[in-house]
Length: 264
Image (cartoon, rainbow, N blue to C red; front, side, top):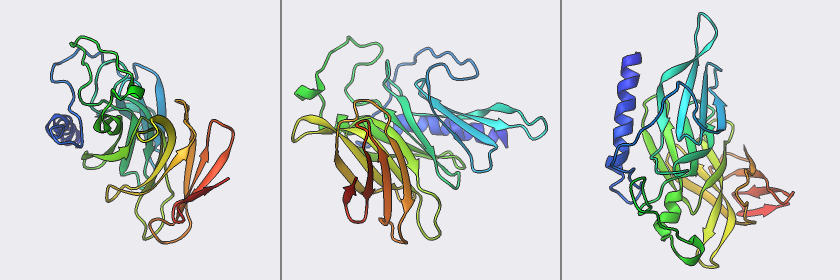
């Protein structure tokens, strides 16, 4: 069983550059780079989540890796699993994971943060300072930054959710509900191309179909904070849900997805 899972992980890693040829995912740098594996996190830990049965702990952070710690049935201790999930990485903080969430059924593991963008300087390139507020980023690059990666913890499949126009800051799944898909809410620092400024955004996703259900993009700029977010159902329809948001300005908001408005 362990050998099968490791083989699946290798396929997952090699799939990223191949899919990067499409506009959906920017490709990782082709050149190899030195990486130190210490058997644990090597940078700031930003998110953790337990599986529904409590036997697996997922840990993510600025080292751009999601590691799984599995409880040993005999000793009761958690041991680092051979399988880890990795997003495409770049230099510096490009690829750093700031938010992670696990679906109530334990199948979908969502990760987001400061994802890499196409056309950025790599580790072997001459540096270039670009003022993003003066149009240095293209529309595609802003959307690259806000990519959410979904990992299937059973099949090791990986696919993206593309929609945010800036780095993802926090995420949460709605509780399971009979007849409804897995719903994921995500907050971000969104670039507003019309007004040429950053705003706060929140989007609701149907993870099973990989589709956006709704969006609210009129919140104050979160300024790289980590907004609190929670989701609950209000009916049987896919968009019948509300999202609670604790923002940096001290205001708690409730977004009614179906009615497409927020209320204080």
